[in-house]
Length: 517
Image 1 (cartoon, rainbow, N blue to C red):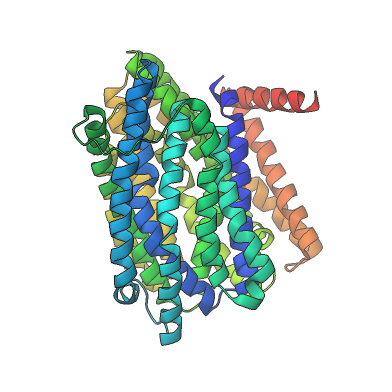
Image 2 (image 1 turned 120 degrees about the vertical axis):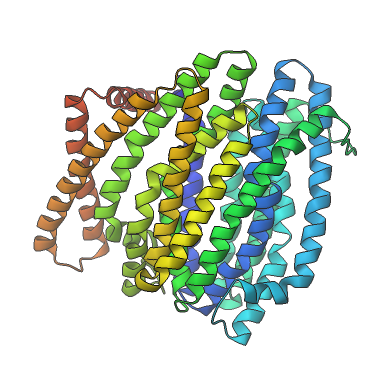
C-alpha cells in the first residue's frame, strides 16, 4: 500500500531525475568540460549553499512534523500562522545572506577554487551574483512543498523540479551557443520562480492564506526553529564536503570539476528515483504514526523501507560498476563531451557507486528521526560523515584524483548510514537490526553474483562488437548485460526466499495492468 501510494511521487521524481540528467547533458554538450562550464559549476556553490543551509531539507524536516500534527488535530488557523511566520523569518535570513554574499563574491570565489584564470574568476563571480536570486525563490518553493506534503498532497510539489530543470535546459539548448553560459545562470533563477508558481494553486485549495507575521513567541514556531537549527548546522557542514571537493577538483585541471559533476549526477539518479520519493512519502506517515503512539507501526514502516532500498540499491550499485562506461556514454557522451571525458567520468562513477545503498538509506533514516522530532542524532551523524568525507578526499586526491573525492563521499555515507541504523534500532520497536543485517548480506551476495554475470556477458559482447562500438551497440551492451545480471539476481532471491522479490513483481504487474487498462 505504501509503495502504491508513492507511485505518483516516484514517477514525478523519475521525470525530474531524467530532466536533471538532460540539464547536465545539455550543459556538457554545449559547453563541454571547459573553462566556462567549470566557472558555472563553481559559481553555483555559493547560492546552493545558502539554499541548503536556510531551507532545503532543514526546513522540510522541521516543518512537516509540526505542521502534520496541527493539521491532524484540525488546527488549520494555527497551522497557516505557523507557515507564514516561518516564511517571513526565512526571507529575512535569505535577504541578509544574499546581500552579504553579493558583496563578498570576489573574495569568496578564490577561496573555493584553484587555478582559475582572471577571466574565469570574473565569470564565476558574475554567474554567482546572478544566481543569488534563486535561493529565495527555491526556499519559498520548499515551504510550499512542505505544506503540501504535510497535507498528503504530493503531485504539484513533485512537478516543481521538472519546471526548474526545463527553465535551464531550454535556454541552454536554444541560446547557449550564442550567448554563453550566462543563460544557464538566468535559467536557474527562472526555474526557481516556476517551481514556486506551480504550487500556489494547490496551496490555495488547501486553504492557506499568507499572513504578514513573524511570531517567534508562538510555541509551534519556536518548535520549528528549534528543530531547524541543528539540521541547518548539519546541512551547513555537508556543504563543506561540496566546497572542499570543488576546491580539490579545480586543482586537478579545467575538466575535472565538470567530470566530477557529471559522475555525481549519474550517481544521484537512482537515489532520486527511489530514495528521495520514498522519504517524502514516508515522513508524514511516520509523523502521524508517532503522533498516534503507534511505535510498532512506525518501526515496521522504517524496516520495510530500508529492506526495499537495500534490495534495489545493492543490485544497482554492483551492476552499475560493470556497465558504468556504457551508462556515462549514453547519458553524457554528446556534442563537446568527448570519449576522454566519458572515460574519466566513468572512472569517478565507479567509486561513487560504492556508497549508493548507504546514501539511499540515509534519506529514510534521517527522516525517521525527524518524524520523532529528533534532530540532534542525524545532525551528529552528518557531521561525522562530513569529517570522513573531507579526510578521505584530502588524503586520496593525490594518488587517486577524482576517484579519491568519490571515495570520500562513499566512505562518509556508509559511516552515517550504519550509525543512524544502529541508533534508530535502539529506540524503535519493530526494527530488528539483526534481521536487517542478514537481509543486507543476502542482497549483497546476490548483487555480486549479478555483477559477475553482467561482466561475463559484457566481455562476450565486446569480442563481438569491439571496444569502441557505436551508440546503438552501447545501448545493446547496457541492456543485455543488465538483464543478465537481473536474471541472476532474481534467481538468487527466489532461492533465498527474499520477500521483496514477489512484492516487487506484484507491484510491477499491478502497475502495468493499470496502465494497460
